[in-house]
Length: 330
Image 1 (spheres, rainbow, N blue to C red):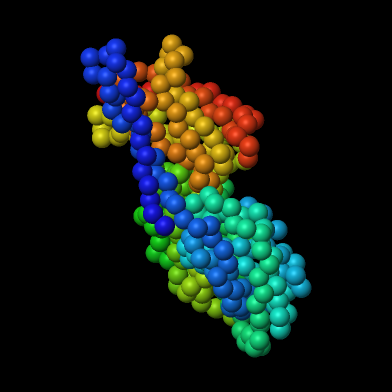
Image 2: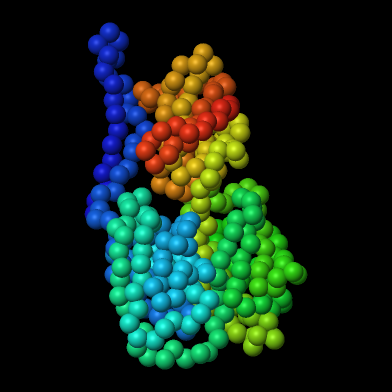
C-alpha cells in the first residue's frame, strides 16, 4: 500500500554533459487486489457491494455481477470510492443469496478475482418507495443524460444549485426528456470537458424530488444521489488534443490526449519523423497528459509535432492507429 515513483536518465559519454535530465515521472501504487468485503441490502430491489480497496467507477458489463436467484442488475452506480450500488428489476429473495463477480478491475487496474460471495436478506425490507439515480450516459464532453427510477419533478430539477461538481463545474442548462420523464440532461461550461479526459468528476445531486404523481419523494442522501463521470472510448475515432495550440507563455505546461481507449500508447515525433517521447494510457480513464518534454527531459521547442496513437488489446498488440499533430508556442 505504497506509492513508488520512477524516472529514467540516459548516459552518453560522448556529450559534454553525459547525464540527461530525468524523464517524465511515473507513479505506481503497490497494493493487494480488491475483493468483496461486505454485501448489504438497502431497499427491496438494491444491494451495496463494498470492496477492500478503491474500486473502478466504470463497470462496462452489467454481467460482471450475477445474483444467482435473480440474475444481473439493471443498473450499477458508485456509492463511494469502495462501494457500488446494484439495483435489480425485481425484489431481492429473502434468506440466503449468492453474488457472482467476474471480469472487473479495481481503481488501480488490478484484476479482481472471480468469486461467489454469500449474504443473507434476513428481514423484510420496508416497501417504501425511494428516489435515486439508476444510470447515466455521457452524450458528449459537455452533456450528460441522467436517469432516475421515478419520474422527476420538473420544478426542483431545474434549479442548478441542486447539482454540485467536484472539481467545480458550472451547470449551464437542465432539461427534462419529455419522452421519458425519468431522465434529464445536464450541460455545462464548454471550457471544462468531462469523460475520457484523464480526470474524474463527481456530481452530487440534492434537493430534487420525484413527480407529484409518484409521491414527491426526496432524492436519497447517500447511495443513488451522486455519480462519477469518467470513461474510455471503444476506439480512436474521436480522439482529440487540447489545448490546441498549447501556449507555454500562458502558463500551460502540458497537453491532454482525450477520448482514448482503455489501453493506448502515444508516440511523439518531430517533423523529421524522429521519435522524441512516449506516453501511455492504461488506467481506463480515457485521457493522459503530456508535459511537453522529450525523452531526455528537455522542454519541447516551439513548433509543430506529430503524434501517433495506437490502441492496444489485452495482450499488448497494436489493433488500431491514429495520426495527428499539435503545436507548441513558447
